[in-house]
Amino acid sequence: MQLPKEKMFDKSGQWIKLETFDDFDNGLSELIDLWSSTSKTATKAVKESALAHFKEDLEAAALEWVDNRAKSKKYAAIGKELTEFEEVLNEGSITAPLADSNSPAAPAKAKKKA
Image 1 (cartoon, one colour):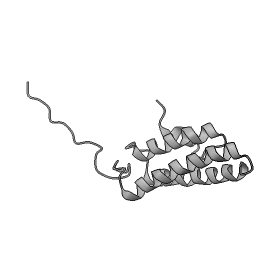
Image 2 (cartoon, rainbow, N blue to C red):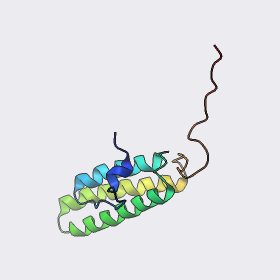
Image 3 (cartoon, rainbow, N blue to C red):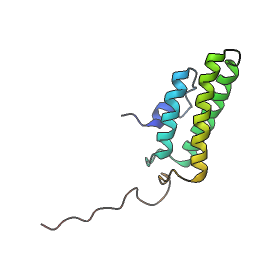
């Protein structure tokens, strides 16, 4: 399984622009996975960058399709889901530790004596 960061950014670290509805639909899931990740590559800066780029691309897509009611509704639905996700972030409900933290992702288990 490919990490969300690798799908959202190219090998040089540049954001991969979202253009189609499927890009946004899949991208929102990837964004949520990224924010829930404890991977060392999922730093706070990467998470915030992905969120900012996603929002920027979504706004551009919504403006592009403003005259197409069907497509506009689809992008508005993604926008609503994004707003709900941001509310969860602001409430602190996503509790995965940031990858740049010094604490381990999970405590080590004690070895059983034989």
